[in-house]
Length: 147
Image (tube, rainbow, N blue to C red; front, side):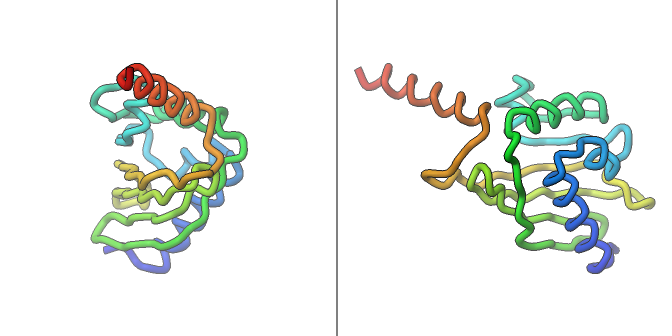
């Protein structure tokens, strides 16, 4: 069972690492063969399963994300505790949406599996370059279908 104090400390450190844009610090929380699932993996990497496995694959994905959103900032909202997992509920201030990151751990406190779940974008918020391009593609499709 994960201790609530440990979970909250982990979540604060995790958010701080992302806000520092320190990819190695972020990756230090995970095992070498961890697996990540996210709808953004489908959008940004073109991986239909939405899953990547291993630090090297995920390093490229997160590296691109950090490069595409130089003003990225997360605000910790809540931490949920499970048996050997936790969920970090945070607001992506840059994108203007709430995100839940569910993380499973091994016996050494390293993350072995994670999944990101995204809420809707808030209107009028600044988004990263990749998200901006996705929105433009959707608008172009809507215009084309409108005619």
